[in-house]
Length: 263
Image (spheres, rainbow, N blue to C red):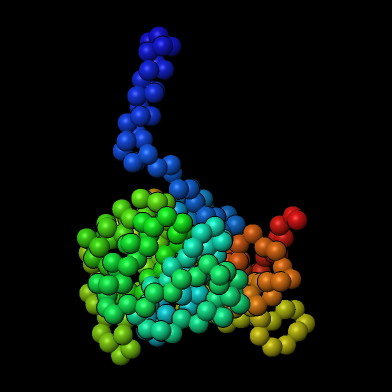
């Protein structure tokens, strides 16, 4: 095959790929900064331009405190690049708490909706809005049709979605859909904190995080720590979550030293 013909074929393949993607470039990934976790995710990080599902363990299925904290911490670097929309059905999101975790409050837009259908519709519209980098929505269930619509909205502008599964207090859980188009599914619960060596009291917030499903990746379970929570004016870290223990063997591993980013 001549060089000219090979060049023409390559150009034609690139043009077809651009048409199929609507002219959008690949959104990329958001690494957590630890190979033990990033190695389970395709591309080495949380896929951008997709939506991800986060569920709570036990009572967290109703309060969603730990899942909301995980979603905010995971998306903090992303939220610094654009507006972040949080869709909720109960007006109980504590913005000062998010700010203490390092989430940029000046980027936060809260939208309170009446029901599940409106929550999903608002999330879809927000994902497709120029300037929005991350959208969070507290919903109880996402069927396949709604999931596909959310994914198309993510692809339109490259925004990333976080569906925080939350059911009414005292209510029965809805039947899960047979399948899902979510990029990942995480189960999150609070974990006991540990004070710094030689000190008393509480340490940085910790979360027990299980990656239950990942398209093209592997599952895993870890203890993550928001090591710089409530002291952001004194620290400069690449990502607000730090992996302190791999729970593959169900035993806590030694804490890893935190790496500071060069100034």
